[in-house]
Every structure is written in structure tokens, then in C-alpha cells.
Length: 461
Ligand code: F0G
Image 1 (cartoon, rainbow, N blue to C red):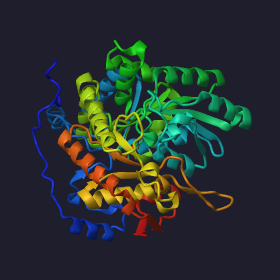
Image 2 (spheres, protein in one colour; image 1 turned 60 degrees about the vertical axis):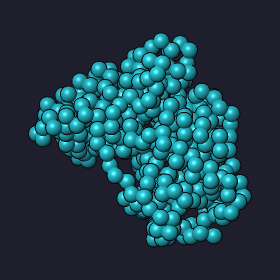
Image 3 (cartoon, protein in one colour; image 1 turned 90 degrees about the vertical axis):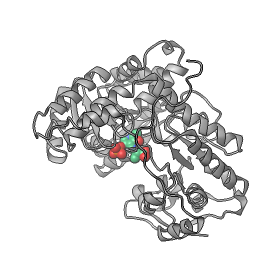
Image 4 (cartoon, rainbow, N blue to C red; image 1 turned 120 degrees about the vertical axis):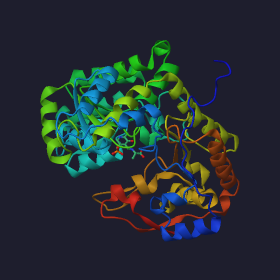
């Protein structure tokens, strides 16, 4: 064990990546209106835009893929997936969907109501979007330390603040709350974990007030690793048993399988409530496909059935989380301000501190994304003024989010620590020269403000 510290896998297939010149990248940025979503992936050297659907699959997953059958109804592949779900999560009713946001749609349709509030630690955008389209309201009630990118390191910054939940019930009345959702890990504030204690307390709180309790388990295995390594009572427990206990407290769980399912496409809507399952089936037939494939090919169901089991491997998770931590440490050595501690699926650079001379209405995090691509061909994503900024519905004034970060998402089993060094060196260089950068001006946004970061256009100031 002592010397076995490298990646717990051999690389069996490679994808060539292109090295590009700074001159080319400057042109491509201009063409993309300084929105890296529009930069061609082939022109990206290290792609850290997302950890979603970018996993390298294992040989067992590729082998399983070939076993996928394409029969429409009650195919073998579904029953293999169902068995994996039962073994890993111990949740009886399984509706596959084509990806996480389709499960978010079912969740919003079945658990929210127009004018009523869905409370949670921090809702992911696709649940928020689905809920808002249906006329529901959403509130993020994460602990204060989870909303402050410069708060001191602490083990569970994804925890929901149940005092805030209590307060909102007192202020608005129990009847105004439709559901409580815990997202584990909490993507929007750094991939920060939620403790088992917080999951249990939330379940108890939900029970006391008779509010349905649901979880978004896109990164539940990474969360389980943090519970095992940071929560004393769980240090001797297996990852499998921690995952099973984590989800044992909720009625329903939604999963984008493109993260901890270790697959390139797929999602799950899982429930213990038979009535909810029946309704989910009906909606899935209209929107996704038949009950047993949910918009996925048999091949995808097979790969997921294997991926769900593989992700429970402690050695894999240990490598995974430590690679993210390694990048965080390299950045800290170079003075780059990040959310601490590093979370599960990426490093979040605090752009407010990084570019402290660029005001939020000039999009400091987006400016950093642009600089990183320009200097090194590395693509990250903005989670700040563009992604989370909004307009006050009454005054029409801009409302800026508390967190202004650039997320460097790390794909699973894809990059080596040499790639991490390369990212750290590039960002270290930009940090040294930070005062030479000016902000950006937003010149285009789509009609739905909460989705503007996908298509927004900017100009350099
Ligand atoms: N829930 C969480 C916590 C997510 O992070 C995502 C996606 C979804 C739901 C939606 O899943 O993409 O399969 O439809 N997150 C990606 C990201 C897009 O880059 O963080 P999906």
C-alpha cells in the first residue's frame, strides 16, 4: 500500500489533444464573443468546463455496452440496471431518464406547486429552472459559511441551515413549503459535502413538519468519501454502506448519472413512494420513453449498471478526491485564492479576491475564464455574476450573487497530475499579472436570465 499511490487504473485508450497558439485562441475567443461555451472543444487543450458526461469508462463498462439490447419494453439491460440500483441504493422503484435534468423535471412536477417554495441547501440550476418554469419558488438555505468563498476551511460547507428552514416556516407558514431537497455534494458552492448528521437532521426536520424530503445524488459517492474521511462515526464504514445510509432517509432521489454514475449519458429518478413512481412513469412515457429505458439506449443502461458499482470503490474515490485537492494545493502555493477546503469535483477560484479591482458588474469570474483559455487553452466555467445574476422582478435592478467563482471541474479518470500542474502554472501566471486585466461588458443575453451564461456574449473593456 505504502508505495501504491498513483492512479488506480491503466490507460487503455487515448484521445489526442491539439496544442494551439495564443494568437489562434485570441481569435477564437473573439469569434465566440468571449463565451467559452461557444469555443470548439477541439481547440481546447484541457477541458474543465464540466465533470458531467466526461468520464472515461472502464473496460468493464465498454464490455457491458456491447451487451446492451435495444428492445423497447422490459429489456434485459433495464433489469441489470435495476439490480445495481437495488444493491447500491436500496431504493425499490427505478425510472431511468435521459439525463439529470429530466429527473429534475419529474421532481419539480411531482414535488413543487405554483407559488410554493422548494427549500434546499443550494438547488442546482436545472432543478431551479424546471421549478421556476412551473411557477414554483426556490430558496437556497445553505449555512452562511457555504455562501462565502473566503470563509475558513471547514468539513461540511454543503450543510443546510435548519435554523433558516425553521425561520422561513415561521415567517411564511408551513403551507408555503412544498419540499426539502439536499444536493450532495453541493455543486454551486464548490462541490462541498453534506454530513450524515445534517442528512439525518434534515430528515427528522422534514418528518416533524410533514414535508417530503428528497435528495439530488449526482455526486453521492464523492459525498460518501467525505463522510468517511471527515465524520468520526463513519471512518470504519464502507463507501457502499455510507451511500446506502445517506439515501435511506429520503423518499425520492434524483441522479444525473453523468457524474457518479461514471457514464457519458443517463439519469435516474428513484423513489420509495409507489404513487409518486406511478406518476413518474406516466410523465416519463410522455417525455422520456417507456418505463424501462427512459430515453436511453440499452447500451447506456448497461454502462450505468456497471458504473454505479465501480464508483463505490474506495481506491478510486481516494484518487479522485486527492487529485482535486492536489490541484487546490498547487494553486494555493501560487497564491491563487480558492474556496477551501477543495470539494469533490473541482476547484473553485474566488474571482472576487483574484481580480479584486474588477467590480462584479464587469464579470470578474468570466474574465478569469477568458484569461485562462487565452493563456493556456484551458477551459473552465463561470459560476458568478453571469450564471447566477438576476433582475429584481419589481425594481428591474440587477441582483448580484454572493459567490463569484470560476469552477475548474475535473473529469473522472481522464487527466493526470501533469495536467493539474499545467492548470496551476497558467493560473499562477495570470495571478502574478492580475492587475493588467480589465473586466467584460455583457452585450447579449437570451430571454431567460437564469440560463444566460450558456449563450451570453461579451466585449472586452
Ligand atoms: N444536479 C446536479 C447537482 C448537477 O450538477 C447537474 C448537472 C444536474 C443535476 C443536471 O444533470 O446535466 O445530467 O442534466 N451539472 C452539470 C455541471 C451540467 O456541469 O455541473 P444533467
